Length: 551
Image (cartoon, rainbow, N blue to C red; front, side):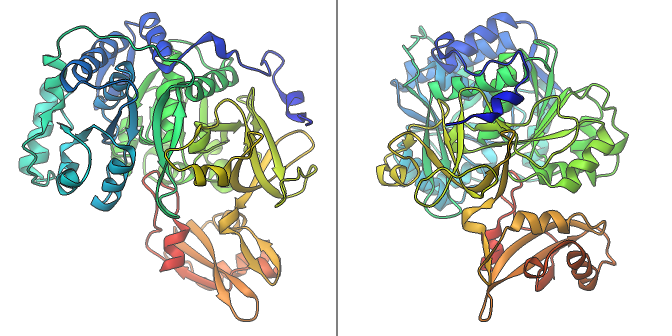
């Protein structure tokens, strides 16, 4: 197949990665903690841990897992908490013990948690005390034998003691729970004993079970191997190599580490170059988020469109010193032009869009790091990655035609955990992963997402893509957020229904309709416009069109 994107690569960027350079995520971790031992690796609430401390603490947890719990290579351990210093300690401890990390959304309901713990067969779970009551409700019905609880302030010294007291006794933010089997995570770091047996890990060994697809059916565990993660670290590393300086970077990590975007892009890729991850525990508290940003000279930030939009609309953000900022990377959902252009205006840095999936560890395409202006594209396929657009019969389509985006490369998952039928639905015999996203490629090899296949609206036989409608809507100065869905219609099959969150309280439906008439052809214009105080979102800020369809 032709690969026109190579012609757009910077001259010094190789087309392929060398997978032989590293056998596992653990080997990469060991290299980083040795090379950058005295530099800060993670920071949270003003407290830092160095790479050496991260190495020592994760080794203690790994010894506990091996020698106290008796964790064997390949057994699963769930981690259920927001961004705290405990998170990297836990996941690297699990990996160093030879275990498999089951990243678990702390906002799960008992039903969702029960499914994930049962499906993964997790032997243990590390959980923030705020969510331990959910574990209590399912513990008798899952194979999980060990519960390790932690508190927000456990790694924060004296300040942490005060934080824990306030959360429990003043704000009463910790629901009561009864888990007699539970053991404090912090004590496992202090009491672990015996030798740490370093497991023999290679590219084929499982590293993470990342659950996905919960909004459309039963959540499935994408099997991500050490090879998948090593590949994506190497691929992304080559892409940003000339922009970032080893040992000198600070990346703002607001997306939760249990999400694949933050896990790979922030925790792993930036760790590999000795950067400090500044962990934001509650990015939805925009006022305090901006306050934290104002006290740090950060060089990179990743996020989703709603996160960037929220920051831009929070008082004080435009007063932050952005002189050190080098990279802003957007992914997880479509970046809207109005948001990207305002980001560039306020920060002076281009908001570069990237594209990936849980099933691809996640990066597939990234815009060049020296991109001068937002271009509406998801970028170019990164090294060792093949991308094409296919029709419904699996035939590759020519430049400019819209079809399903398909991916092949070393970062593509092994398959879905214990679900061969589901795996067969998305992976072809010749290695292509069918993403479910509708896209097109231009003559230079840049790819453009048109929309999710399942979200496409069919109006009188014409395809209407919600992303386009939403992008136009938020271009109006009175609109804060927008979401478009299809609504059944006897005459047209479907019509566009548009949900709006106002920025200007005086905005009317007539204003929105006039704006859409000016910018959209007839069949694309929303026939139904509704105002909402807020839009339903996932934990990382992706708008849930499914919930709007069901409302």
